[in-house]
Length: 146
Image 1 (cartoon, rainbow, N blue to C red):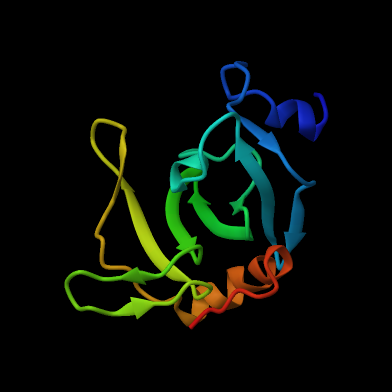
Image 2: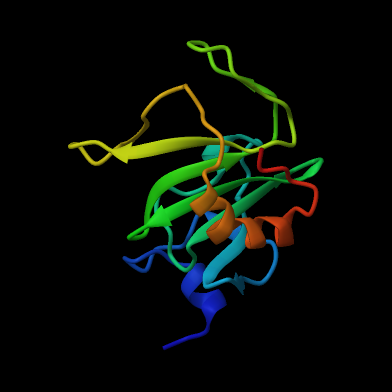
């Protein structure tokens, strides 16, 4: 069966993963989270996988610390919680300062690719704060939800 590190190091077809674990996985409030990094890539939101192998949420960090979480439903990308930068919605002008979460929703297209549904980010809702808030605070104690 193998251990978690071996499973994480390979994808579902047995190929080597593009990601490395930066810390052991943690489960809080029934949500399993893992801090990871894409091998040899720059620090961008694409540094998180589109599919989850072993966790409900993957976290990434930049030079300032943990700065983004990606939520998976059925092992597929569903939501990004991002607080790494100031974000201003182009349509309604709503501004999220750096350090405060803005949420962006992903959808899988018919061709299998993933696309963000809109550049109009939103705040976390009460359900998301209750479910994902504790694990986000574990990985980044300074994150603000609203």
